[in-house]
Length: 414
Ligand code: AMP
Image (cartoon, rainbow, N blue to C red; front, top):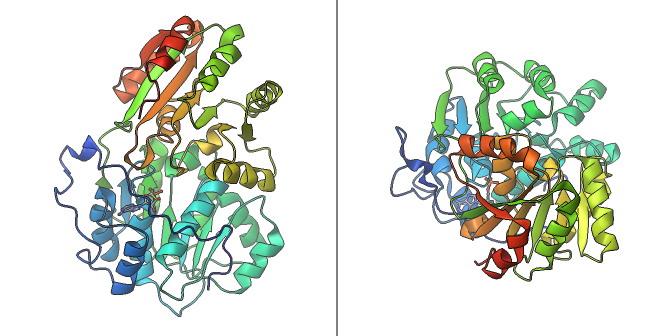
């Protein structure tokens, strides 16, 4: 039994969006994707994937699983939502020694939410094996984590900061790690985790197998790969920063003073069924939250200064459709896998093209349509051009006055 699971098991099979056009290029995705049995996985793991509703491997799984099963170090470039967790989770489960020593596999994730999500996905994949796993992250009661660790789980999914706390307390040792995974490596860099990640890796045996996944490959990620990996094989399903093809992208020009009104006119539209609204700062998230609450909107907020309990609650309410709108900072931009978000609204323009791609990727999950709307003040237009250049897309312009017409025309037509 796993030492702990933060949420009840959700057996919802969630089909992936179709393999992206990114399949083009020197490493073209095979046209017929293999089944999990064809990839050489044991029957109980194949059964677990079937129970989760997976029929065939996704492109990243088709390429990464054979490399990982062969014991090679791996650099995977793939978007969130591409099935990355199973791409590293299944080979680890296949090769883990069970019963065997604790902490054989270590997965580092940038945020608490991703840590929970990844650990739960691993829990589902491991449902037919007596494997122990635990999620370790800041904001969660230390006592609960210590109790979980005493059960000697083989798989640890952790944020770097809290993991270092445990290493200092000696409640955990990395001496037996055979598999290390750096998930969302570029995000860990953005969040200033680079030194922590290196400190952690230095405490693991050098003979480990290391797998690194990242949506983008900035210089630090390459450096880390060359310093901590042995002759890694690179598998990539994105030639460049790409957007989900089914997302329609619009921007709305308005003055700073009109922003809240422009937003509420959007939220008033029945077509905007479920909206994830991004702000750049925690302060803006809180301010916007109070304004929208005062105006009677069904809204909650998620950012890094809230207690873990409040963050979990906000996410659960949004995930379970108990609240229609979630205001969030970039903490919710990556990896979160919530179906049915009809609209992503950038109340503030994201500061980097990568952040834009990640935010926009929260809609149009599981092959659905989605709309990304960005509110832009005239001074911010250069940021938008930069995003268009990097993502090689065009974001259509509309003025605040055109809004109603735009919404009426079916901004959210799915
Ligand atoms: P991830 O990129 O690991 O966050 O996965 C995104 C979503 O795709 C999760 O809900 C997974 O359960 C689901 N998923 C992963 N692999 C497959 C697959 N081969 N077929 C269908 N869904 C999958």
